[in-house]
Length: 257
Image (cartoon, rainbow, N blue to C red; front, side):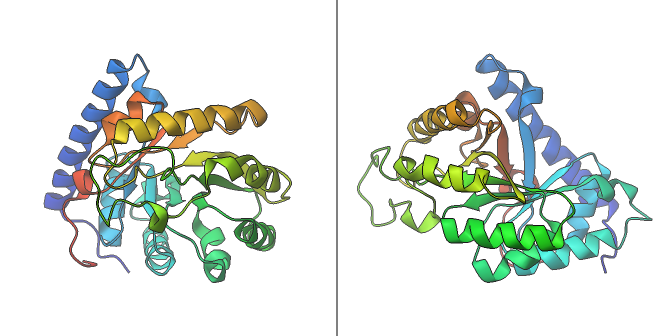
């Protein structure tokens, strides 16, 4: 069980969160957008449940995790302190990492939005598990592989996004149709990570085009999850509705604390 956040850590997180929200607001205004249209997801991987509690106490509502083993135990630990920290009851949990089919029965129990759906077999597994373990549909995003959409700024063996996962844009609508046909899932939009070695602005411009094509067929799928600590401004400039911030909010990562 979490011991509860310290006053010092809560103050640190509050200051960091204010700075991140200022960045989001400035980027939105620069793009002619309403800052309220951009949702901040605090990516808390490797950080303890105490930090999630502290974030909830200072008003953060969206939290992201990328490994089920860590996320499931953290969500349970946070839920256990609901009486002392009632704000945690309003948390919305996002699963943002690559998802293996053997983890879906766990993920659907705590996640409100899964960002990384990239294949039909995963859709089938999620639909089955959500129908069995949830009392409402599970919101999902299609993860897009942008590797073929933007050139690398400089050749590098690390420049491929393939390891990041995702469906190529040409296959998006077929996968979206499968999700739309599922009984316990709701298609909400797209997610992507800017390719290593590429210009994030070019990547997110390409993602905006992909999102437009999806919404032409599925108007309810308007979520665009894009942008992290280093490229959040570029993502917002190209229509991101949800940004996934870790380092700028919680600090540098080493190991699970």
